Image 1 (tube, one colour):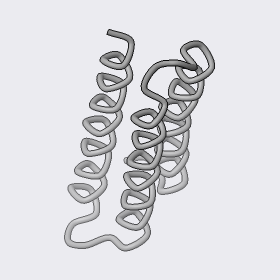
Image 2 (tube, helix red, strand yellow):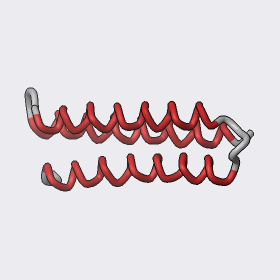
Image 3 (cartoon, helix red, strand yellow):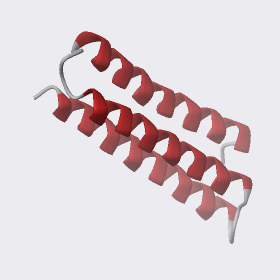
Length: 89
């Protein structure tokens, strides 16, 4: 099992990638969907805060708890990247 520190680093890294892609989109397309991109950044930061809070306060069996957090992270980040892709269409 990965350490709690590594899980937090993974969360921060993936969330920062989503935010970076949103900022890149806003820089490349200043005329398109700025409000939606800002809303996605806010939504992604809420996801980060929720996941970090869940890491800091484990419930039940540790291994299953952290696996669920990591799966939720991957699903949330994947959904965010799909929304960014939809912005350009």
